[in-house]
Length: 136
Image (cartoon, rainbow, N blue to C red; front, side):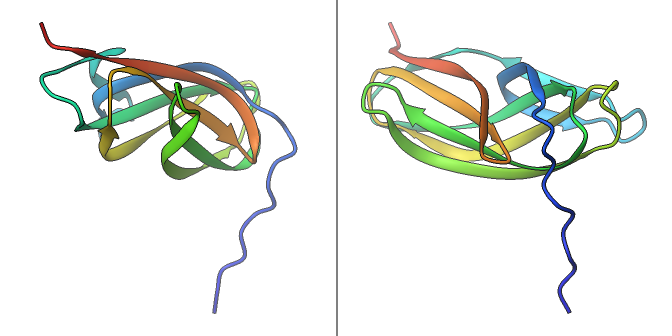
């Protein structure tokens, strides 16, 4: 028997922050998120390469059930290189909500900008980026 999912919220949340980091973990005793190694630039010895990352998102004005999609996009070609999904149940619009998604090693085919585009219930909320540059 399959469990019925809650209907998707019609409330569009506001994306307050989206950060790329090495690791995002929740402290089980406090519920606080710990972000380790926040960055927006990757220094690469040789292209192509790969790199694992975590993406942390903080939202306000959210209420109900959301399906999130974070698209990893090579800006120069507008090509989506990877997609990750997550879910969030927000109870109170007056409280903030946050989540993080861990990515496997992502491809970095060449020098340039790569975006992490955040979508909730098929609505674009915003993005952040990393720049891949040669190590000097």
